[in-house]
Image (cartoon, rainbow over all chains, first blue to last red; front, top):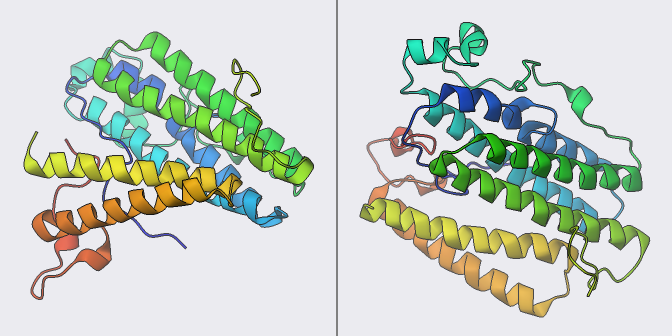
Length: 197
Length: 81
């Protein structure tokens, strides 16, 4: 079970409305590499994991992804709540606004509602953990793309934090995979660009 | 930054540090160094959360301590600024 803490994992305080940027970032709420899919993927895959290391890692990272879902929702909320109708109408957020107003809805930047088809659960621990490694890199790449199109420092500070979490999760999933393939895992560094010690 | 915001920032810092050690321990469950760090960080986070709840309102529903009012419904919620 879960219990809620009335706090964010990382502070968010966005001063300037920007519906265009919100329409891009919403992809990390409900898009193919977003936080909702990440959380559902890991929490669902737990049930067929063979050891404590893999069960704990999927549980705790799956839980952290729910906190990230809340953070991305907070970004969308703060980027849109003070936007005028005219600002929204003249932005790429206009079609979203017609269906969802200033509500936060799980959808991709391209307009596709959240789909469980963006994640996989095979019941095979190796297949699932390798998918999780890829998922973390895809989320990291999406955050990189967001940083390419965003020039708001209040937003980018938060996006950089979320991006960094994907890197850490990738490392932990690599170690979890190693725990069911080779032992010990403690000397391996999985993130690209870093040498094995 | 108000006193409330400053205390919340400290809670976020210690909670995050504890969470990082939590994930590390998931894949290194026999690391005594990590266990020590985790305990220190989560103890500090819990102390600060208790202080925050007494001064500014509940972070968890179990923090509600009023006999007259369900203070869980009070502002601010995490997504507001």
